[in-house]
Image (tube, rainbow, N blue to C red; front, side, top):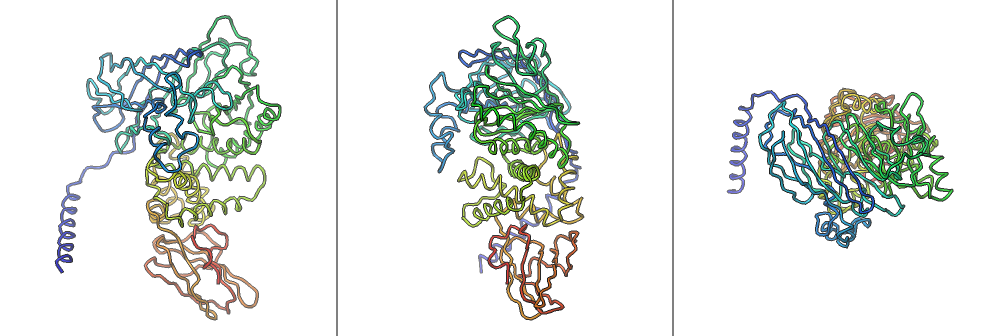
Length: 604
């Protein structure tokens, strides 16, 4: 009795406190804003020791309503040192990434990665800074006021690590330099505050802006990456065809500019072959790959090129137009990873493998690069949507059955949901207990979210949602609510329940056919997550009829030719209705678009 009274008193207190607190909130929230950066960098690279020196001028515009007293830079290469967070996490987590394992702990001083900041000024005044792992903490000379722009001038030096993950030198495919996340990169500040996450294993988040980069490197190296080359004549006649006639001198300076991007990546190798192919009414595609590969591998790269054109056209038509004048596919030597206006991908293997990674990484141009979600927090919007569209594009280009691909993806999600190892998709990407749980949650449950959305609101509404989402949120940092609000506006339905249950909890979907008695059908909800129901009833005379049961909290129904019944309120565990003819069998979700975890009870 005391416990019950105590709990009631607590609820009463918190209710009063909450009401009192909420009554004081009268200010209107500011409209969407995002920070802006303009980078100018001069880099001198020594290919003999894989070290480089850099000067960086960064103009930072504070578009937030907040006064900033500190800023943070990412120093990603510092992860590739013995004792780093990435090193220790890899050695202490169950089932670590085999590409990392204990390799970082064994790196020698001339093999590690580092970025060392030698000086940093704010508007010409020295500021205090301290490197803490992969993050540089900076105390400002003066706070940056809302709407103010300041200039940071930095001198730094760095060493490229032996390639272990994404970036590095001399990888297994023999690529000399894969340079991603290679410069001191200002952390993002948004409505949630600073995102100065350490680099442990997962992915990235960056500030939108413009890059002006001059790279001086050995003249024998061919360079490709982000941005438009400003001085092809200075580089040498024949650059565009890969048969470069080098000018005199030991080094060349490559000058790139990249407008409105949130990253800058490059790769270089003396044996790169460089091909180009124009997409009709679209960008020029650039291909950089090792000329020293076998004849079969070189043919794969040639055969890839027209298919890459088809991929670019598919994504532009089905998501939104690619906004830049070029895109580069670069042999980087470690899986595949999306970057600004380019990707680094494995170059060897089968043609099917090369095409598959190209389809996935090119789709990332839309999901994460142009729709720049925070990959550490909303990875499923990035990886899952990319996986969906990569597979959809492949099925379109090769005329394969997309529904069979989806069936396999749904089964992977079910295996996770039934394993007891699932964590909500609100879990930080570095906080998963198991790598496999992260991978299925990010790639496959994220895929299911988008595929199942078509089940909830209708295929045409799902397709329109994607296009409107791109139209409204390209060149921003969208969050999960943005995709679901777009779907609500397109469909006219209430969908907050879908976002909450499927991504913020581990609630599962499980509906079953409980009883069939003559013309009377009773369904039951077994899982906690609510869903509308598509149903096919086969009658004893051999005919069949499709039924649709809306979910009450949707406050509406999707477009359908099926016979629509009264809605089903989630709190009622069963739902009964009668048909016009005797029933032979009943099947819930005959198209398999609902992620029901137990299909055994979906038929009578």
